[in-house]
Length: 89
Image (cartoon, rainbow, N blue to C red; front, side, top):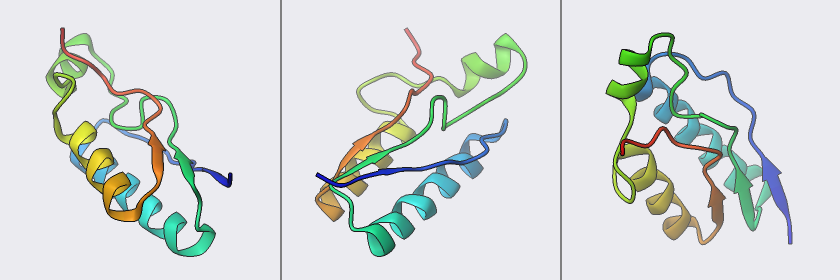
């Protein structure tokens, strides 16, 4: 089994983080041909205040980060460990 670890600098902009993660996953698939891709902890959002974190949280299963990882895993036939995703409870 070949594992690729993705490093990225997440910020307080969820859409930007997801776009960056998508690009890095796509690049890893082409360059490394992994079986399993691991994203870093809180790859989808690193914000400052509690209110910002709550606004970026998503219900699981579902939500933009979850759905993106699921779709990319299916498309490229790889396992994706999504580090952690801010979850709304």
